[in-house]
Image (tube, rainbow, N blue to C red; front, side, top):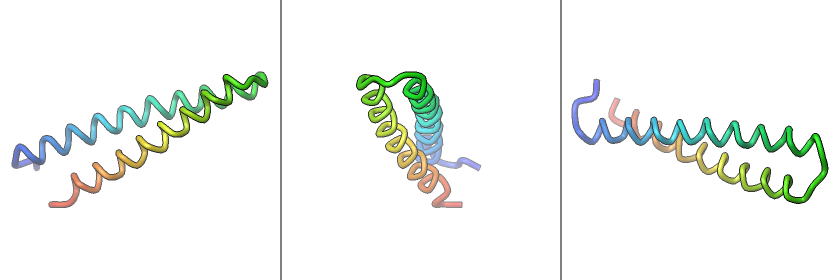
Length: 72
């Protein structure tokens, strides 16, 4: 159970990070499919940027999940 305000904030942070992870996962998959359809440097740039945001959000989600379960 969430007992303190800090635990509630950790849960909120985790939920936000998870939402960003899902959004960037969809953007990354869209970019991969879009790049496969045609060959264009802008598409490759989009996929590269989407991958960086996907990776960053995955790391932040994992870190916030670890922080959330630290006291349990």
